Structures are given as C-alpha cells and as structure tokens.
Figure 1 (spheres, chains in turn cyan, green):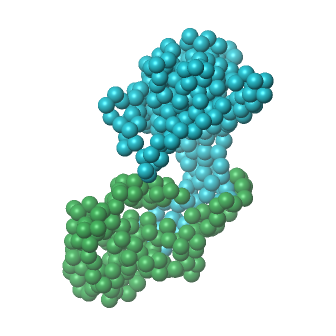
Figure 2: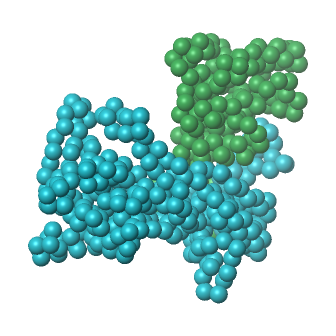
Figure 3: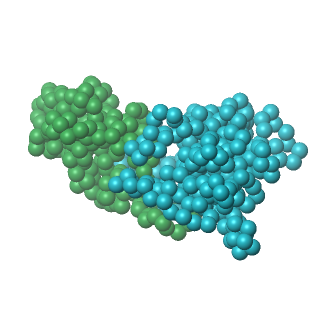
Amino acid sequence: MVHSIIYDKESGKAKGVRVIDAETKETTEYFSRIVFLNAGTLNSLLILMNSTSDRFPNGLGNDHDVLGRYIMDHNYRAKVSGTFTGLQDKYHFGGRPAGAYVPRFRNVGSDKQSFLRGYCYGFRGLRSSSNVNKDTPPIGAGLKLAMSEPGVWNVGLNGMGEHLPYYDNRMTLSKREVDPWGIPQVKVDCTYRENEEEMIKDIHASGIEMLEAVGCENIKTRNTQQPPGQAIHEMGGAPMGRDAKTSMLNFRNQLHSVSNVFVSDGACMNSSACQNPSLTYMALTARAANLAVGELKKGNL
Amino acid sequence: MNRRDALKFIATACGGVIYGADAFSQGKSNDNSAKKAFVLSRDDYDLLDEIAETIIPTNPDSPGAKAAKIGAFMGEIVGSYYSPNQQKVFSQGLVSFRERCQKETGRSFLDLSDEESHAFLLAVARAPKGKYYSMYRQLTLWGYFSSEIGTTKARRYAPIPGRFEGCINYKKGEKSWS
C-alpha cells in the first residue's frame, strides 16, 4: 500500500512513491516521472497529508491549509413514498421495472428557493408481490392465493441533493493513532447543515405534491438522518481552482505547487452537484491523462 | 433481492415486527454455542411442518410449506437469529400449542384431518395466546416465499437480468413475481 509520495527538493517535483508491503511491512520506493494519485477521495487526501517534507510540512501541495477541507457527500436523506390502487390491469415483467429520474428543477432559471443549489429525484414504482388486505383469511388456501398475486403499486421517491462545500467540513490525520502499518488514522469531521435541512423540506413537499397529483395514497415522508459518508459519494478536500492561494489543483488536475502530481478522483471536486459522480471523475481523469501526456511530450514535466 | 428486501413483504403481510429480522438483515448470527443450545426434536419438526402446511397448504398448482421444508427453516432461523428469550417463547409455544390442541380437539395436531387442523389453527389465529403463533406464521411466510417452491411455483420466477417491459397487461389470476 502507498505510504506517501516522495518529494524531491532539488527539482521541486515528486520523484516517486513509498510503498509498504501489506504482509511483510517492508518499505519499497518506486520512481517515475509523473504520479497520478487516484486512491479514492479520503485515501487520496490521506496520502497527500502523509507526504510531508521540509518544503511541505503540512502535506504535499498544502501551502494554505486547504487540503482536507470542503469535503462533501450527497444529501440522500429525504424519501417520499405512497401507494397507488389504480392500474390494476397493468404489471411489469420481472421484479424490477427500473425507475424514472426527475432532473434538477430547483433554483434553475427563474426558480428561487430558500436554499442554495438543488436536487433530483430517483423514482421507482412496482407492484407489491402480495395482495393481502383486511379481508384476507389468516391461514390456508385464501392466504396462499393472496400472497401469490400482485397487489397495489408501491411508489417511492429518493431525493438526491447537493451538499454544499463548507470550510470546516474536513478530514485530518490523527496525531496519535496509527494503523498496523504505521499510517495515521483518518479523522472525519463533516455534517449536513441548514441548507441541506431546508432542501429536505422542499424534497418532501414537492414529492407529496407530485404523488398527490397522480392520485397516490398513504403518502409518507422520511428523513433517514444518515450521516455524510452513507451516500458513498464522498468528494472534495483537494479542490481544483485558478488561484493557487485558495485551491490545490489546476485545470489539468495538477498540484499547483508540485507539477508532476495529478489527482483526478473525487478529491478534486469543488461542488457535489446532485448527479452520480463516477462518470465525471472518469471524464476528468481522461482529460487530465491526455493533458499530462501532452506536457510530458513537450518536456514540461 | 437482498436480505432487507426479502423481509419487507413479510412485514407487510404480517403487519408487525419480524422476530430476528435485524440480526438476519445485518448478517449477525448467534455464536456456535448459542446455536447448539437451541434444540428441537424430530416431533417438534414434524409439528412445525404440519402447522406451516396448514398456513400455506398444497394446492393444485404448487406444493405447500411441508414440501418446502419450513420446519427445518424455522429451526435454522430461530437457532441462528432469535435472541435467547425469543427462542424460549418459540420452544415453550410448542408445549402450549400441543396442550391447547389436546384440550380443544381431544387429539394431537398431527392426528387431525386437513379440515380439522385448518379449523383449529384458524381458532388459534383469531385468538392467539402468547406470541409464539405469530412467530410460526411469519416464519412460514418468510421461508415459503423465499424457497425454491414458493418463488418458482407459487409465484412466478424471472431470472435477473431479464428483458425490460415496464408496463404489460395483467389479467386477474396471473401470479406475482417472486
């Protein structure tokens, strides 16, 4: 496993990585002209923070204490559900009729809300696999029949909202606790705040409005209160930006202050938006790799 | 279907708490000593099979709970995922059930005809004394509708991945997807 990136004072560049063998705990150094650090958001931040030198005592490329700040996840805590008794002469093939998607419509164009940014909805509707109701016999052939025929439609909406970048939502390294390989433990201090709570109110209200409009019943809302991390879209902490004083990476996903180190996983994100992020990371990585090769060929790296 | 989804429809059908569901859906089974401490006799398994068969009987289109070995399923789930107190309720319930059957029918449950066992269990369902009956019932539905017989014969089975048809015509009498 990678312990850290090796910084070379003479050239002002990274010269390779320091790796620990997971079984023997032996340290090996590997050298290269460029380094792409894509370990997954928190692990990429961990490796940067653990890459200390006289030049970078607070982590590689961290001249300003931005590293590890503005970490985000998605605001996936709001859910709305209901039942629909109509369309009893319709069904879907198999157990998963797939879902629908409602793209972001809040704070778009002339729409103005009490919260910033927006959310989209993941929407699913499928018929219950049993048709049990108050008249169903508690045992026997009648129960078996009711358990074997489709019932009402269950409809569910999941709000998929943006989590704003906050300066003090951050990841740091423990000064005392280390893992069995001597690597400092990660500490995460990250919360959802007023803006995310306001957004949840609107996700619930708009969801109720939509389900009522199509004639759903038993409409319920829920706030799962899940903490950041549970949406598994953690990102940020080494943001891209034009200004080297306030960001870690430039438009090539290149560390401002160590030009042959690139970070193009979730750590580079400035905002979480409300979309699933993996394709964005892949596109950023493809672009960064292309730009890195171009720079290498020009002799700039 | 994951463990949590598998239990959702049972919760809907049973309208209440599913014993052992939290431990089961989190994959937290009892340790080996606790599993070994929970023992059922051959007679217990026969009785559980018969109770389950009365709840979900064989009909022309599909075998019932006995063929799906629901007695053995109950033993496995109760041994692995019920708390010691719930295990006690489950086991003592078998004693109470036998006594009640003797008292109300004059015979043991296994000696009753299909009609008689249905009538007796219906009486228990309408006026259960103790929590054990709801355990037997929910374990029967849970086990049967996740068994091969339940998923392929009682309901319709569509392997995943399958074709996508989000809206097809449905005629009353057609089975639901398992």
